[in-house]
Length: 403
Image 1 (spheres, helix red, strand yellow):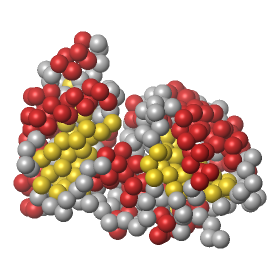
Image 2 (cartoon, helix red, strand yellow; image 1 turned 45 degrees about the vertical axis):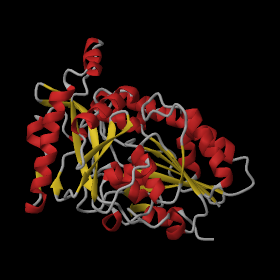
Image 3 (cartoon, one colour; image 1 turned 60 degrees about the horizontal axis):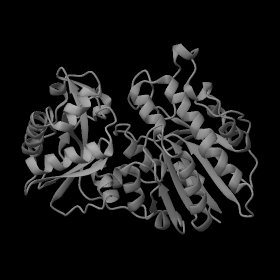
């Protein structure tokens, strides 16, 4: 049996008045995903364990069948694995966004989706100006970067910047959970303030402002943790070989710890203009040799964070036509059985512009199994699916059939 998960990050939503109180999934023209729903079996999945915030790191670990409370050590440590950055026993890693602050408020979490080249120049500049024996900066993709801190404490309360657009940044600076985290919180908040002074008039930002683009005028560290200990998917589920395909360091890093090969696709951006065709072909090629492929598409999540309803609908239609159709058409011609799952990791409602903890719809299609009575794929139809309501690890346990 071959297995592929097609994950449309943040794809699910809530009813939106401007599109007739329907969700983007209900409005989007997605004949291929709906076909999978008719042929497969559907349900709803709670991806966020009790006590955790609905971040992509938590949700994707759950989808892949990990016990999150046992393995989670922060987003930064997962992304470090994708970036090839080792975390020593005395080091803590954190995600470090480049964000736009305007009039003292968080304007957006992405510095206007800054380019890789501009971001790398700024991160190298910050490393030269602020890096030392205690803190190091590492460039990632677009606005997503990494810092490591020696002897830092993860006893911190950090606010993801995508959760607080329009909020005064001083209201959501890092706070210590207890006395152990005070020194680290103070150190990091000082870095934020110093970064703003350094970045505001950097040539990259002056050029962006002249072009009418948002400045990348502040760092934003969050999601602290140490190096995690995780079993591979082969150890957990007996999968012999697997590949992760994503434009996002977080997902690739999870894949590294899961024992998956990382497949980089030229033109994969993490946005609506990503190389859909290249990612679909990479997934087809990988599935010919591997048992398992995790294909992650970020575009719908970014559209949700922007609050752009029309763009979110478009990203779902792109997923349908440019990912699901070519993959299904290809594997339908194979002589081996194939299992396909389609789902988001969490909702990213356009009205809220951030993640929520609501369950997400999923479909599992098996070429050797009859479907249920669900005929279209969305947040409401899938509630009537034969899988009912699953929680976290139960999805992967259901998805992988022991032979």
